[in-house]
Length: 374
Image (cartoon, rainbow, N blue to C red):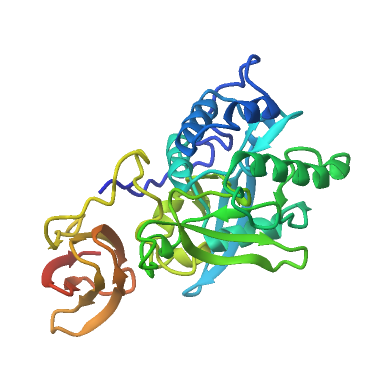
């Protein structure tokens, strides 16, 4: 399993609030020219072409400077203020004058966010971004048909969104934070749990808010990871954020028992599709056995990571016990698919001492010891 460890620095100047991409080459195709290139390509060829253009810098300039989203919440009597940084609109190919809002599968979306040190948003973040949006556009659905996952429908929807955006450019120029134009491809526990039997590897979509603030699309994992239609959008969120001025990864926040509620409804053990290094890698390779690894670091103060593998689908629990065997915390109790997982445990509210953690699956149970030293 590949994952980023927590990095904390005490300077807000150590990372840039812009996308890490080269300047757009002057010879790059515009959005309409790019549409002509991909219009008749297969899905895979289309997505390969999108990735090449993104990494070469063929995105509009207005997408490069990120907007700040600020969230404050009191947790256990402590006020936490989170700042994270998002693209002002959904990922597009082309120039400011001629751009193409680009639907894509979660496989490609994850590959792009990995390359750019970004992440996809959670459901809660989508709501937060919409709430802060300066420009709220009404959704533009297209009646479902057999071509809704093909480039001509993508371009048709792109035109309808830009037609709504154009009259507002004088007051809210390109680069203003926009909401209501697409459903979001999100990270969510439904990426890896509560799966539909016919869709073992889904894309999870959410949002497309109406002008009254209600989303059209509840969280939904009924399409496979190779699916994208005209309504899907990819909002890039910079991976590094700040809590009370200290730098932290959003991927660590969604796994932290204290912080997760700032941006997620539940702890997310796998806040990504595929892997965090390359979406071409296959995270779905089934482990050959169940195994509970030693926590790291150990001894710890106050947080530690607990990793494990499971080889069969089923309800899995990970619980913490004290020295006399009393259960004091449930880190996990839900149905999981085969794979490798990591949980973060914080003992900040506990006394120093020896604790135990027990993994239980349909075919396996193991207990390990860990030491908390303040």
